[in-house]
Each structure stands twice: as structure tokens, then as C-alpha cells.
Image (cartoon, rainbow over all chains, first blue to last red; front, top):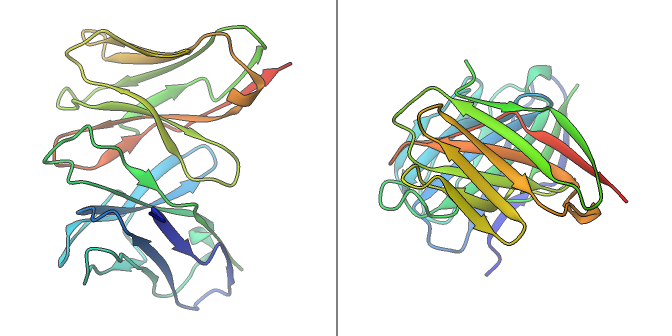
Length: 116
Length: 111
């Protein structure tokens, strides 16, 4: 199992550019989520999905879009990058927390994004 | 509004000492409280977790103490080692809902 994979590892964008952060998991997990990590702020949920075709907003969704066409993939799109979106982004997956809330959430290695 | 409040922000402990990190919450609907460990350049990884029906859970040198009435829980690392130097996050979740994370504690264990 590769677990949760994220690409790219590093990215530099200019203000106004768009890009997609890729996330894939091979554990057949229903639940996938995107977090951003900023100094002193911890991990904040951007969007999450409880299964293919189902997505919902988290704590800080503005400026980001997601879709879930397959169980394995959960890309995060930045529509028009802003300096405030400079952060480290983590994708995570688990079995549905509604089925068993004690199931471990597995995190990817992260994408470090800088917006100039 | 921070759903889970974590302290301290940073902690320096001598090798062999006890590291203690504290978290507090307000939402009584939370029923799962995991702790994550994160090394530089890596994603967080589950360390230990507890449900509110027990007051303590121990796994090796790591112990969670849970005080339901005070709405507080803490991580104790016994016999702290330099390899424990990392950032630690507490979290809480509601069944079928999202996880809420604390702001993190940077632990440094001095040899």
C-alpha cells in the first residue's frame, strides 16, 4: 500500500494563478479531507468528502474547490491563488467516521505552497 | 473560534523527564479524542486516542488522561527521549463529523 500520496511536494504560484493539488489513497477509504497548516493555527479543515460524488465544506473553504469522482482521488483546486493561501496542505483519509469514529485518519506528506 | 484549545505552544524537557501537553474543549458532543505526532516535513500520524468513557489510556510511554467533567484531556510522555522531539496535536471529533485540531505543541527533548 502506498497509503495517501500528494503531488506536488512544493509549488510556487503567482497571485491570480490557478492550480490543482492532487491527493490519492489506495486503502479504499470512504472519508477524505483537505487541511491547511499554518504556524500557530494548527490544522484547519478546508473540504471533506464522505464518498464518491459527495463533498462538503469545512472550516475554511473560501477560495478552494473540490470534487470526488472516484473513491481513490480527491483533488483540491485553487481557483485564483492569493498570498493568504500560502500554507502547507495535507490530505487525509479514513474509513467513514460515522461508521467507526475511532478509525485512524491517515495523512499524506503534504504540499508546501507559496503564493507570491 | 478554536474548538479545541491546546497548551503550551512549546515545551522543552530534559531527556528522561515527563512531557505534559494539555487540551480543553467546550462541545460536549465530542466523543473521540486522538493525539497526533508530526515530525518536520511529514504529515501528522496518529499516536494514541481515547473515548470519553475511560479516564486514562496508556500505550508504552504515552498516556492520555481524560477529565470529562472538566472537559480537559492531556498527553503525558514518560521518560522523554530526543526522538520524541516533534509537534503534537490534540483533536476531537463528533461521530460522522469532522475533526477539530488544537494549535499544536512543539516539543524539544534535550539530551
